[in-house]
Amino acid sequence: MSVIEPEEHKALREAVASFARNHPRAPGTDNRQFWQDAAKLGYIGVNLPEAYGGGGGGIAELSLVLEEMGAAGNPLLMMIVSPAICGTVISRFGTEAQKRQWLPALADGSRLMAFGITEPDAGSNSHRITTTARRDGAGWLLTGRKVFVSGVDIADATLVVGRTADARTGRLKPCLFIVPRDAEGFRRRPIDMELNSVEKQFELSFDDVRLPADALVGDEDAGLLQLFAGLNPERVMTAAFAIGMGRYALARAVEYARERTVWSAPIGSHQAIAHPLARAHIDLELARLMTQKAAHLYDTGDDTGAGEAANMAKYAAAEACAKTVDQAVHTLGGNGLTREFGLAPLITAARVSRIAPVSREMILNYVSHQTLGLPKSY
Ligand SMILES: Cc1cc2nc3c(=O)[nH]c(=O)nc-3n(C[C@H](O)[C@H](O)[C@H](O)COP(=O)(O)OP(=O)(O)OC[C@H]3O[C@@H](n4cnc5c(N)ncnc54)[C@H](O)[C@@H]3O)c2cc1C
Image (cartoon, rainbow, N blue to C red):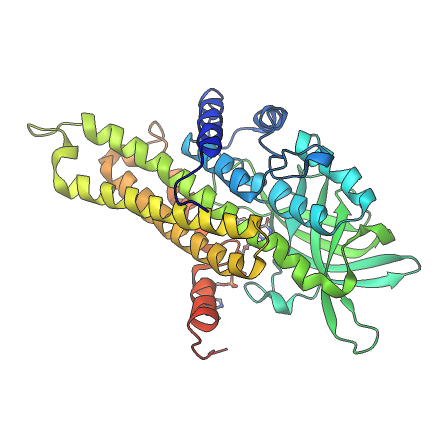
């Protein structure tokens, strides 16, 4: 891997940036047409295999698409889920029939898949999830609850992380199930979030949801490995989402600081304004470098190396994004909080990447234990 971005990635960035700028959209408004148009141009399925209608690229390409959309102020949150987690897991571990059923449709934008792992009583400790699938003839019965799952209303199905009981030991093993939106016993309740986003979060309940045998994705005995195959792309994509948002906020602040004059010179000439913006730019660039490394490791098949790098990239990008948005809002003075300038909703939105899909503290725990070999406190 070169630390200098290849020409084809630069060209893809420019094409996506120009496409996203030409599709301006007020935050919180419907983005289905934008999703469809992006899919037609091959952006949504750029990471999916060519044999199933995708672009044959990897998470490197998919993450730069999302970053550029975000930098243009027009990110598609469900890209983190539908092509990155669900598309990856199905292309790596799905049956031929599952691949044919889902991948072309995820790539061309005609179908969307959500992803549910978080549970109210397990939270960050996903080893404690209790959503359970029991054998029912040839199929399954799924029971449990999830919380904060994004986009379930607009998704045709949700890829749900459940558990099955090991017949020999009785221990529960993580497994992935495709649950159609209208399956009987599958209910959703929107959560009233303080986020100006069109993608809503839902609390889900599964009350003996009857699923066919082929709802299970991958091998019942290799669930954890398959799960991580989807979680690493999710972290890389969340990093790209955060970097895009940070770049967008920084650009607005820089434009403003160049023009706004309250004494004899533009406010951007004061180092108290300029230096924090310069630092924000450096932090975003560094986070992007780590994100590119994580994507490269993942795309070249190093799942273990990608795990550490994706965690670090997500951490660095979330911190850079939250600090950049804070500084951008401050740079605009009172205008930072007006609806007209539109930066204030980013104060809340920027926090999301600190919490999801894995919190800042859990990444610091991971690096303390796995990378540095420090003892565990829990
Ligand atoms: C906008 C949004 C979208 C989301 N979309 C999805 C989705 O599509 N699908 C999905 O499955 N989930 C989704 N989530 C859920 C998200 O992944 C969780 O919120 C996240 O994993 C944290 O879990 P929790 O909220 O239960 O927090 P908790 O686990 O209760 O943690 C609360 C706080 O305690 C800290 N903490 C916990 N344990 C430790 C420890 N051992 N050491 C130090 N600190 C600790 C955490 O860092 C955090 O600050 C979404 C969340 C948000 C906000």
